[in-house]
Length: 108
Length: 298
Image (cartoon, rainbow over all chains, first blue to last red; front, side, top):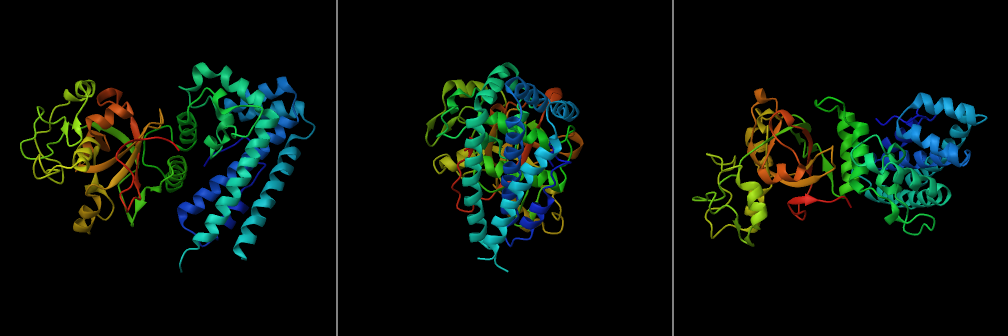
């Protein structure tokens, strides 16, 4: 599985479990999981970039590009008041939306 | 219980729309920075799978700026879609060339299905090969019909092959024996373009090592005969649609499959010490609509 620097903060298992419970084909489940994970990825990156100034954004991206999770966290801790909180809140919002979508569709 | 196709389609459509909105928002807010970063890494991004990690979401190719974005235009991005595929695969594939785990296999399947827009899987109708990722070796041309030789081999029902293509493929020579299914056509005059393409874009796989082969040999042979597959070179993102045309190579060679000269050329793979690995997955194409040959990311 793809490991992001925020994988320890953002647990997407709840979304995966919900998708797994759907009565759809396996490849369809995989597609929905990919979409869900990408939603979360976009939201997390957006949330982090929104908290940084231009130069810091560039630095963050270079660490992200290098997959250097340790440097990313060191950097984020130095620049943001509560990096974990920012990421967790952003991810929680989109996860809630995704779960609501699944439940709404299932109840139709 | 019948699968709920509508449920999937509704969610897919809803999430795809939402995904575009997220892309648009991200690019409107930070597109200039992302664009500068990608442009700045241009010299090594194409050759390095680690150079675009920012864009390594599971549907990374969709992170290209939407056409309606006003801050960044798509044409400003200096990278091809292949880079995103390379990057996504690099996040899944192991460092060493070994059989993939079930999770790895299904992640690859999801990425390929998404990028090429056709159902792609390691298992079809309950049948799978011994692996889906392995070293590929070079095969020779196969006789398409009785009497087909290197002198006639590049003549097809749609016309002669361009001289430059002949030059590239001629040196591989003709295999002394026939392919696994015999001739592709009964005679030169009866050969169709499909017959010719099947030889041009064939692979040899270790069908004899497929789980269950010994117990269901007849059924498996029927399944594997000219079965359509997709081959992907994970290092350059090039992909090609092929058919299973032969069995092999032997296990002791250390290779897991073989490709026709045209397949090897397109994927930029070679035999010998410089050999490399490819992904090989089944394509579910019951109506035979997907043409053989190179396939581009959608």
